[in-house]
Image (tube, rainbow, N blue to C red; front, side, top):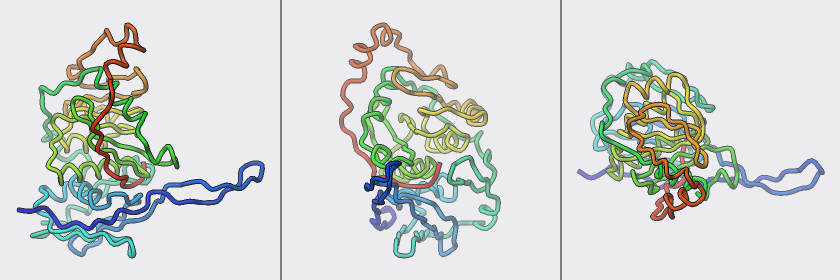
Length: 300
């Protein structure tokens, strides 16, 4: 069975505006091009996502996946995005059973853009399973951090966005998404993984945002055993990670990180810190084969 029919409605990621500085000097700067995208599921209005609009079809699919509204990609016939009306129309093959009931309860999350999830936040967490034997080398952590540091990004040009990325177990960058918030960025990667048939069991997920319970749950639903951030975590994010057996690494900058959960999953390499400038540089090597996904999705 073929995949869903998709539009190709990538939008401009930045917008030019004129500003005056403290001396009254005039210049032009780039700012993120935030826009609303209202999702209609089988003609029923579902949610409005605030997004950059770089990969809206992947965003919508990932949102449906991570909200547990659609269990398999072959349930979706089409996703058509039309920016003239700021809308995405999703058509499923057989409809969504009990959609009204399943979307009646909404939990507002900690995203700066008022992220939300349908149903109880902790529903089915104990049914999530991550591969017990997945391991990550310390040198791979450093390679990932260095790759993100050198990545060309909307943040460097315009600021005010978050980034998420998916890496192989060896530290190769597979997808990179930026948006006005981390929640839609992770959904866009989930959608892209679905479309490309990419499994999460041997992958590493990186986000610039906080490791909240919602981020951990979404990562676990995608089957990913490692979640890295340059930021910190919350008590509930920590608790969920322990329950599902995920390795959480926070405050990842340079050669520093804090391993919060899943200690058995990280393979420490003490020699990397014996002569950091040389050893770490050799361990990271050159990040090659980078395939980036155009920016997507809503606020953090």
